[in-house]
View 1 (cartoon, chains in turn green, cyan):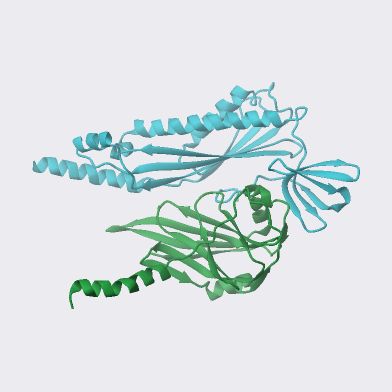
View 2 (tube, helix red, strand yellow):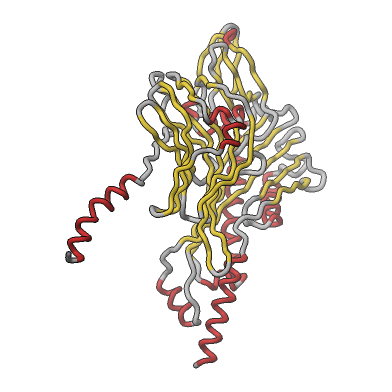
Length: 196
Length: 249
């Protein structure tokens, strides 16, 4: 069989593979967006500490309508709110991305789930109410080790700082200031799980 | 010819080492009292690549020029000024201007990468009543450099100089804003958090109470009218704005 024919036959599979491995990131509400009383809101703190331009970390949230991912972004104002239909949701895990060939969907370790029962429980998102899903820190960096350098992306820290997170949300999203919040208890933990 | 190749190779390898060893983040938290006889105290949390002495110098100059560090200053009582300076450096593969490429190539060097720096400066001024005035400014600075940027300190100092000039400008901007906010020489009472009985939470707001009506002054300049008896709790701000990714978090 000519090489060209083989390539043409493989092309649809390669395209399908590429599309299936893409992650859809949920668009955050904008700072000027007013609170919609018919929608529910999920918010979290997602900070990506970086000195490397490549890679991203996402927190995957599963709802009745499917799974979406909140992306950890760079910057000091890493607070992220998305409007979702009211209903039952749960945090499914996290997603590490270096490039299309080096990415991984991961579930939280049993130790982490034991420490944070919230991560394994489903939670109800009420209309007009803001539900906090945690504060996450990721890191993307370049490690220089002989003979070469390696891009690294990892989940560095998970914590629940409810009061501080609500304040930061109100500071960065003035239009959401004055909403009803869904309280959860504060705890924190250090983790370090990554891709190289 | 062999000597030239050896010279260029050694030069490039040593330059790469400089690039690799250069720290991207250098976090230092420090504090310093204001000038002699001043009634102002400022603390700087510096996670940026700017030198502490430089940040100190620029803030000290700005405060002196505004009269804050003297007895005749605008601040009527003892004030605390918290400043957070943080940044990140990106060494992206960027386009290097042809002239720089040519000059670098002439010297036997390869052009380096684009340097982009984002700086976030947060100022917080509080007075003896623990009333607080907070402002955050974001700055971006782009510089295109060749390998020479890392070899010749003058270029590095020039970048510092440009950054500090911008920092000085935003410091003046903050102090002007602070001055405009003062009511009778004092900061108006600001509540960090007001919780209503119906579950609503307001943060970084002011409150005007008049009889049975209260007005919440939101941090985006808007107002919310509520019955005075609908307030469950109100908490005065006592600490800095909790920022993400900074040492005060």
